[in-house]
Image 1 (cartoon, rainbow, N blue to C red):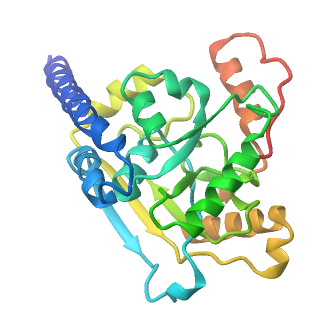
Image 2: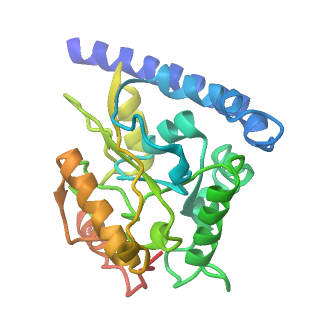
Length: 284
């Protein structure tokens, strides 16, 4: 009886939080569609701040202090990828554009906001999503960010998929092809009962169970801007690997050699479905 009552309370709370979330998404839409030159990024981001600040308790450890500004603005934020909640935090913190799978563009509310932010959509099954290629589009955008302070930062998850939060997958090189400095960010989600990490559960069920918790905790570590050496500028794979090792060391994460293809096989085994067919894994 106790658990039935508790479950009922959690259900009511989760639906209330969902209404709250959708309401602020609606409020954020017109602000996301306004060009940066017209409205300050901080003003636009205030709506997204409410999403995270009222839904998750955030602890931020910022070690990015007293860095010389003359070295240049970072071209991209690179972060480990644990959950769809990662996007909400980064949106509240810097309101960036990002790379997402093509299906995101069709999502209600989120899809429209993503398009207004100038996000780059990709089809994972193809080697490149268009004639220009994803890597070329990302490189061009990163260079534009470095030159124009009014251009929204690029947010990139070099792992290409989410993990359980304990491991760090191999980095793709798309964020590092421009040889521009990057801002490494580490996200962690301490939890007691239900993990915010989105690794093996369907989206609707995961969102519901996550909202059943009265509070979700997030820890954020912003590392100093990483400026590549001349050797790293000439070798994107070396650049990506060195940033990956730094994030793993500072975030106490375990380096893994597995990737998206292995995750798909794992998901197929969990669901009892046939193994996915051979697919290309993009380097960008």
